[in-house]
Image 1 (cartoon, rainbow, N blue to C red):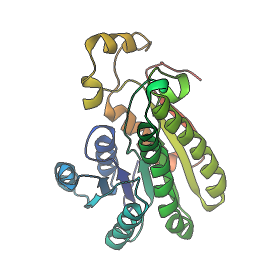
Image 2: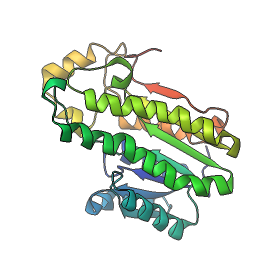
Image 3: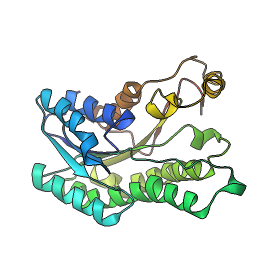
Image 4: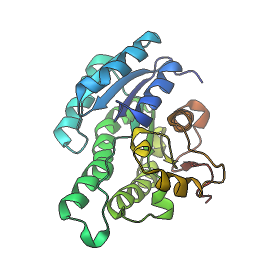
Amino acid sequence: MNFTGRVALVTGAAQGIGRDCALALAEAGTDVALGNRQLQKLAGVCREIESLGRRSLVLVLDVADVESVKAAVAKTLEAFGRIDILVNNAGITRDNLAMRMRPQEWEEVLATNLEGAFHCIKAVLPGMVKQRYGRIVNIVSVVAQVGNTGQANYIASKAGLIGLTKAIATEVASRNITVNAVSPGFIDTAMTQALPQSVRDRILSLAPLGRMGTGREVAYGVRFLASDEASYITGHVLNVNGGMFMG
């Protein structure tokens, strides 16, 4: 895959899947704008991208804040002149049983995971429509497809993002813009490493491949959907879950 001349904006790029997506795209020739709420956490990723000979830009970005999104997109366009690829990876959890969930826990997760992705899509679309080219990849989750206890807010946000993926894909297909989603399963990240071993063992028992996935494996799926090789794929959910959900 050759992404030379392409520019990507990756949200939640400081660590985990977002970092791996940014690096995988840079390795294929993409210049990458890195968005995160805390700027200092992006410095290491920026250096890694520049060591690959690609340009990088760090951005303070809170996807739940419309003005923050607009500013980040404007700065990216000012620096690079275009945005070809958007990876909506930024996300949070506020787990709790539904009957105990506080309104704030529900609202914060929906505001970041679903509304934040919409804000980013809306901000990049005018440029993509004008250049008649774009690749949007949304990071969802296997739990949006199978359910999970204590995550009603997170699951609703990710299931909503699957619906948003299909809706926007339909709206912009005539402009040579594809919109797809990648649905990770149990991935080895800082978040999952903090889980008790008993919980990790229970989740692993649900994956036929019998192991956790890596952020790199998710990133390769994202990179494929962002490539010209995937130009006839849109509105699709690519499962990267070790077989936890086959649908």
